[in-house]
Length: 545
Ligand code: N01
Image 1 (cartoon, rainbow, N blue to C red):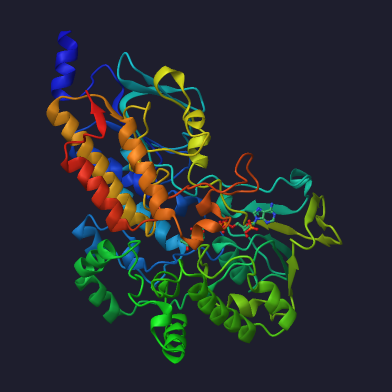
Image 2 (cartoon, rainbow, N blue to C red):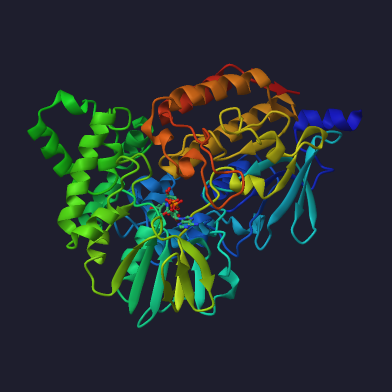
């Protein structure tokens, strides 16, 4: 029809509410909005929270901060923004990062296209109009040609399935649903359940003021020192001068951090040299000890045992009570095979007389009572219970939206046997759905991955508009090839042989008890090369119409 001709020539859709709907106003959603505006598109962002920032909006728990260098984490797309913004610490605390997100929203006048307090309940594809109908929780409906999910990787918090959680009469919080007002721990009996990266940051902070702190640890994690400190004026100037190099470096490294694996194998150097290298990494700020270690640390069992023994000895040196030290040393996985929490005097917390460590594998939590926590062998009274129990990662946020593609197929059904995507951004049978940080994208230093994914999606939309196309769908051959590649790069990695959110395991979620290939574990440059090739070859892994 004449109208369709107009549509395909301009790519805009006057009969639809928007050209694109973006779900989520975190770092992904905000940057995507900027890029869509540059294309002259009418875009709307729906955000469940009352403000921007995503992860940094929700995770207000005490002690939350970066584990990657502040200056490698911010957006890189705007020179002006880089010039204007001063990070105060090498690893900035959450309130500062949230201020940064708000600064970006103000600077680029983003709020006028963001609708807050708007959780998306459903998104259904309409083939006849080549559009998505998006329904909010309050029932409001909006239509758009493109649906872009910017819903994060770790955004759906999960509570343990303990009986009695609601009956607790004190205060209780999940770390990712922390109140906006400060919580006072002075003189209080506090429990923390969970010892992942969040639990560790929370514990070391709460232990400073709590009357008594009890930590319920089911699996110890290997932690290493963060070595945070303020950024001096001189450093600030140097950082600003070297932004081009910093981001160039991030583009070259394995997972977009400043650190990248050492090209040497563990046993290519003498025992003395090895020890000296480990000591140096342990004394250096940031993720060096995890992602800047010998290249075979996560593939060679003997190499992994060397570094694990080294860190175990550090824990023994730092924790006074040898029994407690042994409880804190992981026995079921090697160093770095799960995400390494970076800490500041975390182990020393267990030397405090007001801190107790409970092994909740040996004595599992049975239920939450109105006054505290009952384990298999005791009852503990608490004023405050903190759940640092993690997230339904990677696919969890998708599972909670009723997303239906062609023929009413739900995304949850589509992924029942494990997620399948094209480069983590597209799904067969779900046309015009573009995922930022979908399953099987490269993660690592997340904002670097976000900027890449947003630019790639923007490039695809630009291409479609230039060609007068209005429908994009992943081809099955493209999906199969990508999924095979994801499996191939994950093979032989010790990280994929342990239970963690990175292997898709969450004991608190039905159907997530067994490991899957849930994330891309190849290098970021390899990931980008694949995506770039898809674009350079005219998107032949996609059906465009
Ligand atoms: O979540 P987790 P997280 N009974 O899943 C325990 C990022 N992050 O929020 O190991 C008893 O790692 C669970 O025990 P187990 C980072 O990528 C970044 O800490 O399953 N315990 C575990 O100890 C990180 O990896 C920063 O046996 C239960 C903990 O709860 C990711 O977020 C800071 C339980 C959950 O750990 C997730 O970290 C913080 C139960 N029923 C986080 N259920 C930065 O620095 C769960 N647990 C930027």
